[in-house]
Length: 302
Length: 169
Image 1 (cartoon, each protein chain N blue to C red):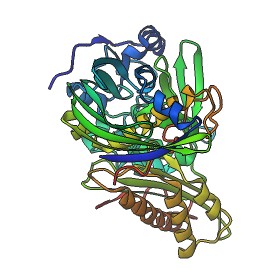
Image 2 (tube, each protein chain N blue to C red):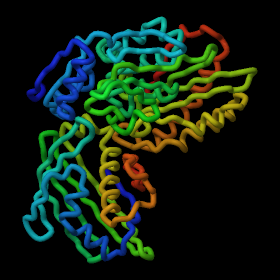
Image 3 (cartoon, rainbow over the protein chains, first blue to last red):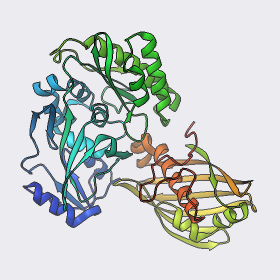
Image 4 (cartoon, chains in turn green, cyan):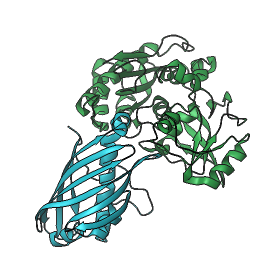
């Protein structure tokens, strides 16, 4: 399998990359880790005329915290973020979700920015961004702009990023101290795309849920933030009955498609089940500041 | 892959019937339709580029309209092949008067095969529904009235928002 012929550019600076994208527009495709784009090109399902390879661009691999926000350069490899002590302590939800992205070999090459820009409907990182209210910076011919997660993911493989813009940074708010979290997903085989997945963050104050964040992947054209479930949880005391209500709210908020791998009904059902499990796990982790390092992501076979 | 749905169009049955039989309207509204050349009565040669984002395939084939019962019913038979695979589909359209408006009921059974089906299976149903939604959105606009959904001017039509049906069962 070999791709159709294309013109190849390897810019060294962000400015150069942006100029190339501005010049080629829809004809150009950005190459980051290549874990989605290259197979599509090899199968000739995607035939971009121009490739702008970011692998030599300087300044896209930063990973730092500033004023309560984790700032991740677009080209930070998923594996680097997954193993970063900073990510583990400030945003363990992201760390756990990263453990479910494909396989380690894929994560060694795949990038945080690439996954966000590719916007696969079953991807993990977009759902974490949706749950925690992250945002991205994109640079285009007219300068830089910020796009919030809620406005970023439009539909299958489609974001609000223009073809002439380059995603340069992904920002995720740091989880509040002592907040519990959980990433749960279900796939037919380890490493497959999730049939359904859910990310949860819970912050408690005096035994009452002060803040709840829930977002799902694999159950629609784009990540789904479960606003109704979050509202229902906020101000409640944790209990199985409340978890079940939240699961019902989640089921009501999604409109999954069925395919060969799982019917729509199954996906809807499982999204609720995973929500309950994730809420329980998040509760178990809540209230212990600095407890970020323990526990691995849960992934179960269907 | 079976898809179905209903749409209410702001025009009387006769007007809707004429529009869905008008090659120009079909050409304008079918997402990715590059060419629609009549090769006989109710029979066309079609070139279609369908897909999402950079994953697109071009299919060349035929589109036939059969089982016509003016002004309320017809069947569309579609067949195409391309580098990424083949597609074959059948759909029926039924119109029903509802005052000054028309209730359009559609259902289709589409088979997609080859590489695109193997790789894109997860998204085929959803993308199909979205494209059909775009088709009906465009039809609504042909009647010059805002749709009942009231998508604000300038805003991109939210995908999946048109009352696309219950999807694949």
